[in-house]
Image (cartoon, rainbow, N blue to C red; front, top):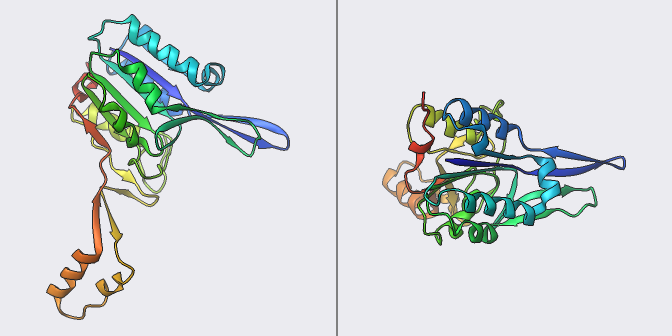
Length: 250
């Protein structure tokens, strides 16, 4: 197996000084897991930090991925981890926050075109906003694939370091690694800004207040609850069960 770890960056401006923030802390934790738990040789792990991303830009990074895919055994498994910003249909690998510098993105379509040569199993962990929107392109590939994401295709992601937490939230990567350490398929929950959740309740009607005031008639209450509130399952996993490839070897 070969692994590609990509760190996104964000550039901000403070009193005329551009400050580049690297989202690579989770990459380091994942690298440690791959090396010491999965026992991947160092030469099989390709680590692209913020400095590399700035130098390579999207085109150069895609060329590196294509080179890795082309140089290995076509049936060899491949893992790709991306940690950074994202939008629908893209990984926003370089973003700008009031710095006046142009950012750049890696389009999902362009990534899929590079991965079309992949014939072995493919695992992608998208640790970014709108993470699961990548599945639209992965469905066009001929290889078996598994996508694990931080957020649904239509929602923001709430990111925290793998070494830290927000209101008890475990980063999606930490959730995934904890499952793999137990030799179980990863099925991470979505952090909605307050807690880890598997479902959302969305009001469907402007008069949904009637769900709240139904008196003692429980049957009628349930009718309005069903009629005006939609329960949405948050699925941060799609594809073939390939988790076993990243279970610990010792």
